[in-house]
Image (cartoon, rainbow, N blue to C red; front, side, top):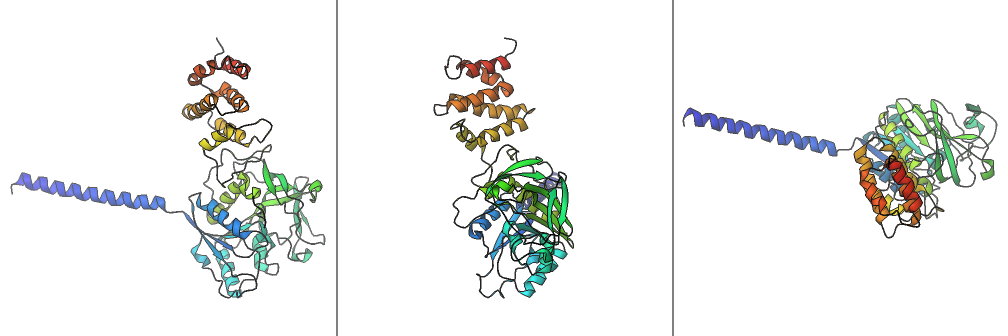
Length: 416
């Protein structure tokens, strides 16, 4: 073999080796991207609420963030032998408590306390703050609790009055709520990673508004409250709705929202975009101390509830389909959703054009209502481009739409 052939063969082998290494690196990188950042464990199996429905939803909410790999573990049934219940807490970054029931074995309680002290994250979901009245460390971890015979011996009531946090040691039972209803959630800390970027007030879907919670309240920070209206059987004061606690090195996120009732066919509190978003962000914070998730464009405001029937945001096609059926006398939640998306895209011509094309389809649809088309014309009047002008001109003779069409064209072509 002459030197030229030898050099060519050597070069070819080197190239093959380099390509193989690159393929291997890319495969490793691809696998890393598929890995979830955190492992979460949901503990359930006993509850005075519908845990059979709530726990699968909580798992779905975490998994769909693509940040979590989530397991569910169930305790033995009420009254059964609890000695076998001994989860490996150390395997997880965060434990979500959807549990109110029989006491855990002492060994399990000790392991859980050690887990949290050493930096394990915890999420206390709704009725989990009813549990374990006599477990001192647990009550320190949850900050505030209700029912289960809690009284002044367990700690003060904590609430807001005149914009200030109050610690109230008045004797009385802990835990109450009035009739289920929609209510506003008001942020008390807008800079915490969980709440940063959220509106200062937002309307929450029909839920139990937990009140008169009391407990040790050590190392606790209230992130949001809700006013318990006396007309709904409430206390007439601003009650904690979202708060955090530190216990040792552990971070705890406590949400009183998200009622899931026995016998209920629908769970509006769990469908609420506000509950879902704060639960997902709170769980990430408990696991890591940071929040990387962005605030959804259709997060509710103080005027409207936003519900996600499948516990996730509707796709744009689904929103358009709902808007086609719009009746001005009925819910505007899909209208608000699209409006929020449009306003978030302001200044981004490519995204606005994609919305514009979908809105023109509504105008051209044979099934879309007149109310839906009037809404679309109002929105196009401020964000439409040349793309829609010729489409609008075809509607100038429509008896039902001519006024809205004229208004839109005048705004889009002010010099003509």
